[in-house]
Image (cartoon, rainbow, N blue to C red; front, top):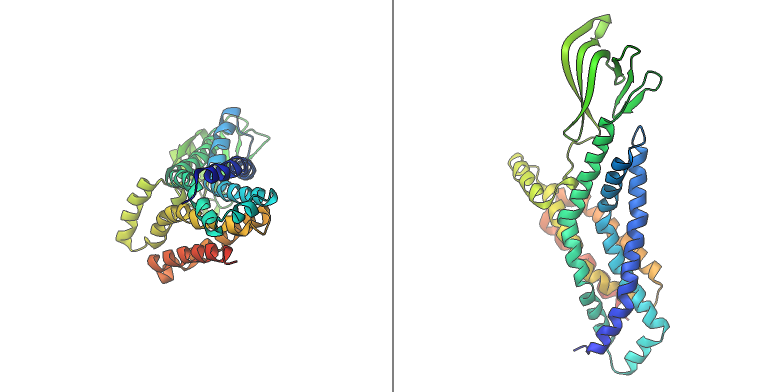
Length: 324
């Protein structure tokens, strides 16, 4: 059994860097996601919409930032104990190295539980918030006569008399009355008095026309669905025989949280000989590569073998870290 003074020592060494690393990862990754979202917009959002975009962007990277924080805290804590010669003192007092690894796995458990909540609910809600904020920005566009603006695949500009010119590169037309409204992950142009150009110079007229304008390739991505919503979607996809990847995505939310335990044990083992930057970077990059490979193969090898391979990889990494 590990004595309580050792537990307090390890917690004091790992908790502050865990919070610091997680906070820095959230800021850096969140700024990157926010910048990507802003570059995809045609005009600058209002302050209120910018806050909504920021909340969605920072929330969308929360699970990755939390995982980096947990691993970074464990690795930095062990490096600190190594630099202060505490590891040598503990070894001289009879502490076996493997117990330090078990302590690292125990210390990360609160982070694992938080990661579960974020992965199943927090991050999907944030991604949906980011999508809806982009839609709100597009709906608030104010086209002008001298400034055409882009909405998804469409370009629109105001006529001198107050109507609207629009084109998607294939179709073109004008409308006397118009407004943009949110519509299923995109916007819809509600047009009145429409004249739509057709083939061979023929014009099609309509008193009222609603044109959906998608802002993304898919209206609602599975990563934007919370676990209950994704379960409902899986029930629909199962009837169509195409639910394997969706089931893997749902199960992966739990797996990514669970493997934080063996990866934390691995981080503690590697940090006895390496710096925390190398340790955390290697574990995060390795996890990303393995997940991408399994994503590509899950349809071919099935959900069960894919899960076993992922857990086995984490176990091998944790064992290799404490081999010496």
